[in-house]
Length: 299
Ligand code: NAP
Image (cartoon, rainbow, N blue to C red; front, top):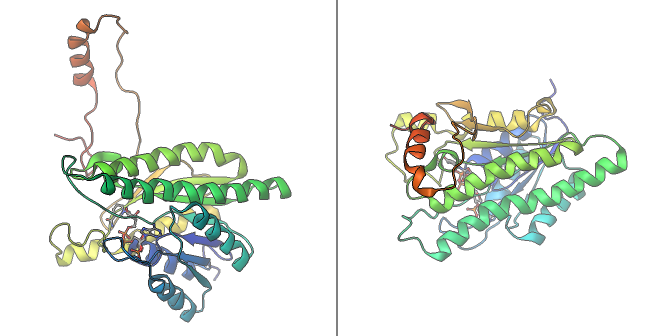
């Protein structure tokens, strides 16, 4: 039986470990040809080692699939372009870009260094923009040359920290909220080329999260990245062409769709700031509360 992504060509950034690795394996199992990107840095972000990406490539090939490794830093402009070019030269086309690479530098705002802020913003935000920009240009040219929609996909990675907010993660949450906004805007811009853009806020036990809280057997089971990969693989398929600009929450405990920002209650504008006290109190009282990390109203 043909796989859900039979013949499609996909890039997965940060595909050497964690959730990205699972995306690569499931995409290949569903018939996709995969470019496995991974910088191969140590947990503190230092160094570059091709082996995590190559190991995933070897695993895919051993199972009869097709894959190549790419060691670019996703936030490097030329490296991101080279990754798109590699997919086209290795497999003749590109259909899917999954922007998954990411790092954490958690710290309370008052203690956070400039370097911790810059590193997180760079890898997540520029590391989403740069590959998407180069892939979008490829799909735009393709659409103009063929007159056909590209039927292509961008799948970004946000986080509950970005859409709901988590203490100790002003850098990471700001980047992940930025990726949510990027997703909505890019979905509107790229629609004309037949490219959908969605995001996943995953939850899984990986190198990124293994030391956040106690690792119980239950957490191990529900934290298996295998729970996250199916929605990514479905979004990567041709079947998902009518879904764009959406944010899915995916883990072993939930598959949800976020409802985003909406304007809540309103009031008549006033020119005098001294008049605003009771007006704002009324707006706050009538507005839905912000969400906690579970996506429900915060107490
Ligand atoms: P992970 O196991 O640490 O995997 C992240 C991968 O990204 C690593 O393989 C890493 O490669 C790669 N990477 C980092 N910087 C890179 C760069 N500049 N260029 C290329 N590759 C780079 O973490 P994960 O949990 O699977 O995270 C995957 C994504 O999900 C991230 O965007 C993360 O923020 C997001 N997320 C995860 C959770 C969760 O519960 N795990 C929750 C919310 C969001 P090397 O380290 O080998 O260099």
